[in-house]
Image (cartoon, rainbow, N blue to C red):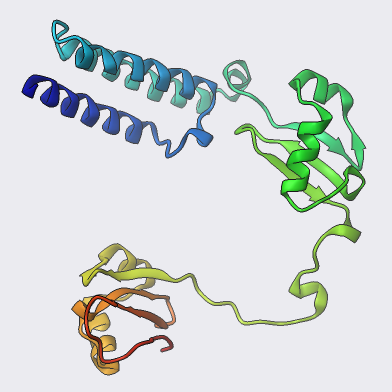
Length: 234
């Protein structure tokens, strides 16, 4: 039992490291070659876990080899873009200027019902509302509606609003997030001063977000007593 546990930990760690180095975060980002490599790695990784007669190295060596090959081919494809079309899909135009490309649907083996379902999920009820639609390499459908069906933006409405910098987590569970502080150009001393000015202790806060302007949003920890029940503003 202990042997299986140790083997599982070793293989799990190797898989995590391999997938992390591959640079993919989820299956939706995988292309055909990436998916093939991932499936092969998962099959190899299971062997020494289910069969104790197989040394762990028999799984680790192929996994590392596949990782090296994956990185190698990724570099080659970046430097030789013409080869990329041989191993990965290309974006395909399904609707162009309001006209449905029937040949593209046939080549992709996508039915009109499936296309309609994707369009409805993006908030459009009919093909006549769509100007262009592109099936991206990751299998997702990008839809561009005709101007009369596109939702108006603030610029079109003549409304001017100030741009607010992106908020970043700078404190979580009472612990500093130094990466978040660096992103907004501040440090721990600044954050401590801001919290003291508002009457908060770090331990009393569940989360704090801030932006480059020094604006903060404070979320108290409901499991602990806090001097205030809400936070925000600079």
